[in-house]
Image (cartoon, rainbow, N blue to C red; front, side, top):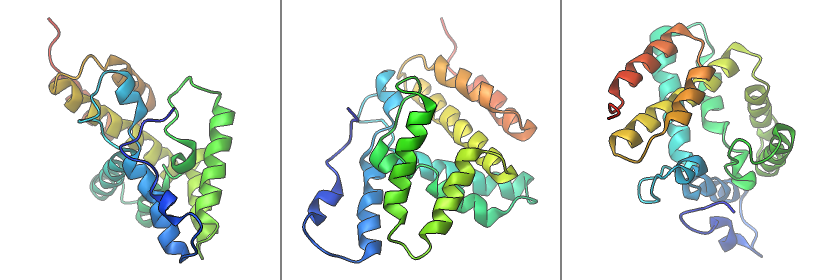
Length: 199
C-alpha cells in the first residue's frame, strides 16, 4: 500500500469531461501527494518526507546546473524534459521500493502508467519516447539523468541524517554504486564528509 499525503486529485474528475491538459495536471498531482516510500520505511517521518514531485524537481535542477557547469555537450532540452518526466511512471504504479517486485514487472506497471497519462496529449508520443529513453539508459542524456537521480537521493539522505532521521547507509551505498562520472563522484565524496560522525 502506497502512502500518500492525500487521496488522488483525479477522484474529483470522476464522471466529468474536461480538457486533456487539466486531466494530466490532476494526474501529475499524484506525484505531489506520493511520499518517497523508501524514506518512510527507513524512519523518516511523514512530516519531513519528500514527495516524488519534490524529488523530480531536485533531479531536474541538478541536471540543469551540472550540465551548464560540466556537460554542455549534452542536449540540455532533452535533459530537462527527461528530468521532469522520468517519474511519471509512478503516477499509477506508485513509488515501488527495490526488492518489492521484479524489475520487469515494475517496468511494465510504470509503462502502463505513462501510456495512460500521455495518450491524451498532442505530443504524448514524444513524451513517451523521452521516458523510454530514460528507462533504457543507453544514450548519454539517459545515463546522466540516471546518475543525477541517484545523486539527488544521496543529497537528500545527507539532509535526513543531519536532521537525525536515522542511519541511511543503504541509500549512500546505492548512490555510490550508481555513480561513475568523475564530476558527480566528486560531489558524492563531498557529501560523505558532511555526514554526521558515528559514535
